[in-house]
Image (cartoon, rainbow, N blue to C red):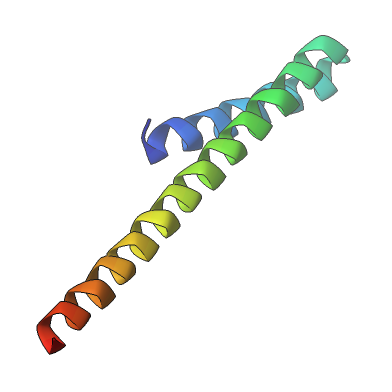
Length: 70
């Protein structure tokens, strides 16, 4: 999964939601909201993964520093 997947989902979702509102198609509107939410969730998952990776690197670095000082 890439950032472009999340961006694409958010953009397509907004377009579907807007088109649904303009045409009065409640199903398309709801589908658009759902797709937009999925894109936002993908972004949040990627942010969390990046944060965990950074935290892991900090722990790894801290443990490496302790070994060097012994």
